[in-house]
Amino acid sequence: MKAAPQPPPLSHAHHAPPAHIRALHKAHQKSPLTAPTVLDFDNLPPISSPSFPVITPSTISAPVASAAFSAFSDEHEGVTSVESDIPIYKVASVPGLQVIPNLLPPSVQKTLLRKLLFRDLSDPRHKTNLHAHYHLPPPPPDVGSYFESPPETTFRALSADGRDLPVDRMLDKKLRWVTLGGQYDWTLKKYPVDSSSLPEFPEDICDLVSSLFGITSQAAIVNIYSPGDTLAPHRDVSEASCAPLVSVSLGCEALFIAGVGDQEGVVVRVRSGDAVVMSGEARWAWHSVPTIAGGTCPEWLQEWPEERRGWMRGKRVNLNVRQMWD
Ligand SMILES: O=C(O)CCC(=O)C(=O)O
Ligand SMILES: [Fe+2]
Image (cartoon, rainbow, N blue to C red; front, side, top):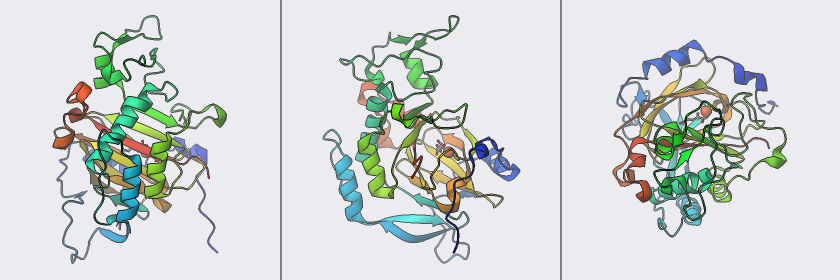
């Protein structure tokens, strides 16, 4: 019998990416989304072509997706029902890598953004990249979120010689990530040992992810990118579970690279509402984001949020969900 797969040892978090993934990343830092090396699910080659890059062995059924979306929806954005089953594509060259293009309907994307950026970002237990450098008191209850903070709001630097951070600059430039639930320590590259002090993972997001993908969300990184930003090649190996890693893209388009071991990697064009699942062998794949493309936010999302019109036009938000243990 084949032994059950095991997560790699924690020391793997400190391994350097292989040269071929670094080269692929570098080659796509300036390349257009339409480069011939890019796998684009809106422009797949004809299915008869001998090197057809994907297989579609399964779907998320329309009733399952509809139930998941309607449970998640809020009155503000309304409910959308799903008419047909949603295909899950397996990328033939990277075993275990799955892409579900166009999974989340617009109303669900807007609801998700509001939960992440209005609600969860306002909860000081979910840390951001800024907490190490600034006092970040939660927005007062009558204000509700940082997006509604008056423009004169500033955050005090922790160091005596640091400059204060105005709320505009915080939202437009400096905010790079928020961690939900299990608070990943980026310096030590691990999760805290004492889980009793962790904030709960938001229940509604956990329910959405578990009904669509069957994983138990225990930690997430919400990455907030601007055009021109990149994410260097890495592997997510700090979790003690082999459960798949689920990644949802919102806003501007990007290129996403993934490759297992020394096998050739793939470059996928990801759009707002797409999900990428790294399962099986690909759970420990090297991956990176070499390009975030400005001017590619879908039109219906460009003015979001109404409290700060146009913010989303220049952003890509990625929700990266993990199960830390079984
Ligand atoms: O932004 C993405 O698509 C990937 C993010 C990622 O790999 C991570 O947060 O570990
Ligand atoms: Fe990652």
